[in-house]
Length: 351
Image (cartoon, rainbow, N blue to C red; front, side):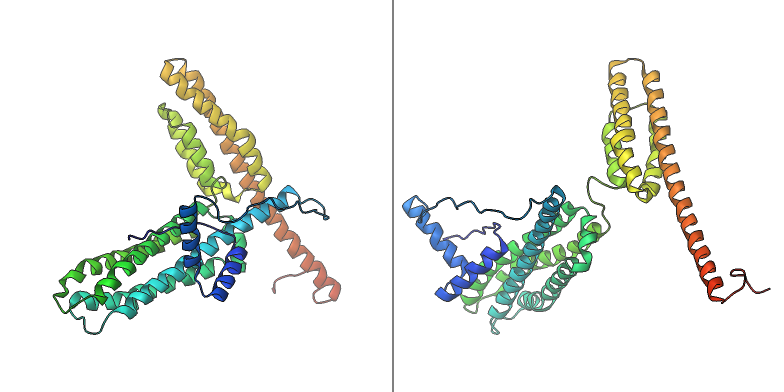
């Protein structure tokens, strides 16, 4: 009977408790779930009583919205971390199973290549993925992860899951074939060599995906996200001089937006940016309806100029403030040195 791969998520503590109980009964989790699935299929029911748990009284004060969001965020990080750890473990198990099952009696170029792939090349790449995953979720990287685009990390995890599924299928087909080999031609192993080589190439692609994630900015925030909103609003605009003004605005946003103060960014996104989006949308509509394009285009240019000015002034103000802060630090050092008698009348360079 053909076997299929089933993936689903459960709470980490629940999984640990079930693994412990299964070990005590001499079962694996896979066997336990298989027994459950067969019983459900045979009896057409859940084979135990399901009741609602009694409400638990909460004596402590209600959690704030910020607390709840932080808990949810931490839960999402743990979910991704747990899935990565499980995938790396399953990949390692499949590679080990294939490598140890290769009989020494089977020779030939394809089989030697399979030995090399499972015993060295893929094993090293799997270890690299596991090491990168551990480093990614180390405590010092928590704040960094919040600023990244987690959809790219999910893409990385899905790619790793695809590798795991391919190796599991190879484990279930290649091992029986090797065990049943009767000394005939080894050419039949060539397709398995090719599939393992393709898996190796998939591992190579993971490096680029991880690099994109580490260089990303969280969706919904940052200069690139702001520019994506403007692009979406202007996708139907055709007026050339408005598009040229938007190109200049793009360069300013990418260069300066992330350097602005948080309050300035909030005002830009809630007020100025919404106004620009609306004027761009109306210009696109007017172009399609053959209306007064010049008037709408002039409004767009005014909105672009205001947004550009706010970004430029905001960056300049922050730079000036940083300069003033540094001057204040130096002045404080001068006063401290004068009070201690280290220098007279402040810090002066030697004549």
